[in-house]
Image (tube, rainbow, N blue to C red; front, side, top):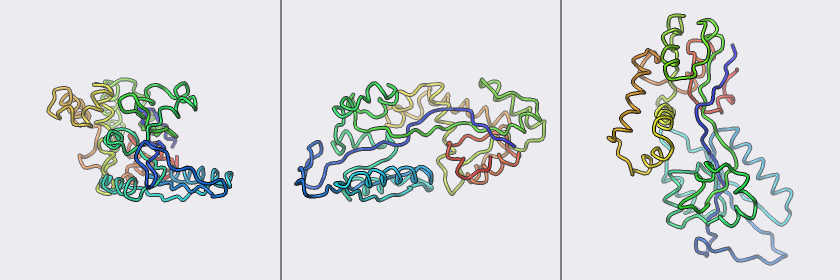
Length: 292
């Protein structure tokens, strides 16, 4: 079996951010140390998977080794669980007072930028030429009211993986439209596939269950409304949001799911790998735990 990923959406997942150092105000530089004193930096890393964390730590260690005058102290966490505990992020980011932090940019960090908890890095963007190097859509995610607060370092893409053997057995091409996807579910079931689309999002880690909502909302309503919904500026009863659930229901009615209860993500990956499922919407980090 070979599992292939078809891109569904692209989400920036990690950005370096700068916080005020002890004894300084947000937006003000730290005192410059004497030339003979090594500069100490505290870097709190919020990771998104094993490979992601390993890469961040390795890059930080390489920088540390290449700069004798700088000592980097790293703390790291993967805050994944039934819910991502925002109060824990607040504690790590601000109460422990690091110099640099990393994390997913966008909705949850916007209030902190608006409250002045992050340094304004707009001038640094210009100095490093990031305005020309970073796509405008990504730069917007790293901004609040036109000012840059985060520096993107890597992107996480959330594709639909599909089992090529299951598709070949059913005589199917990869769906390129919503109608093709709905029709493929019926064809796959007719070919003996138990679950045309595996659902990841069991009790061990629920957030993936919402990936279909996010993907459909972005496709139907666009990123601006998606952000407004996340910020509470658009009600969940808005007709545009209701339309997303109408589309999502079509996947259920078309028999795309074997059962309404999502599986643990490891179970969903296993079903995709052995052919019990034909598709799975999950992050690219599936490569860390699947034999494809």
